[in-house]
Image (tube, rainbow, N blue to C red; front, side, top):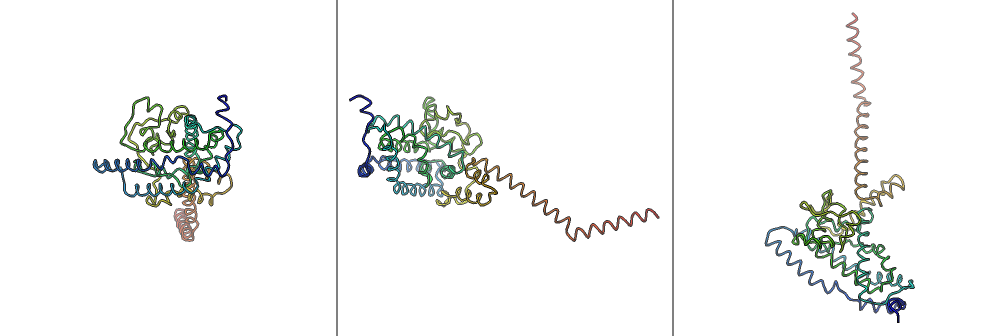
Length: 342
């Protein structure tokens, strides 16, 4: 057999095989969960011992509940997502066999797609609504990595180009799990800047802290999940310079409500759509960047307030009291003229 025939030409996957593959697929995140929990406890202990205040009760409670909800949803829809990737795989004439060394190119391509998925999630409001929950935390600790949207799985559409490359679905999902695990350790303040070559290539805690910053210079920067090199190539890189201020530019009203934290942006979009004057404005509210929408709404609010003040002023001028006062003033002015003439 040639190298190409060993690589490509895998048979299609039947429904029965899909069920077996799904049941027997490596659950890397499940195995890693106890270790992740242990590191959370260690970080919490040092934060408490050193009085750094990295773990706010409400913030931590919300992050954990959001994470639990996300795990439940992922468990429910796991087989459906697996079938979607299998359906794409079965349509391809260049289906690959399971070769574990293919994890490397698959992982790199997934990370490239992750960069663009992440970037779009910051530049289009609809996708921002599926991501804003992750940025809503005002503390920065390992539990923030659990704070992922309950509807984030629709972003699989950004990763289908990787599936179209013909990677076996098992390779695809294992690479994705490794990518998710990598993003756990970058959510900490305890790891400072690493050696320059690592900071240059990878999304380190320092690089990712910048991404969570609410200062102007930090907003919409450092989208890379594993490799920060994408940000350097596409001009979205920003080094950590000043102390990062975490959270959203507009603070949440119900920080301890995981349902509100997950869906508040969708609720705001719906409210804006109901006020939209035309389809174009409605599409703007859904797909423009969050910053542009905020500035547009602020501008309209100022116009509305100015119109209200002007309207009240007009009503005041034309009111009976004002009209009577004007008539009285005119009479007094007329009498003054008559006195001057005499």
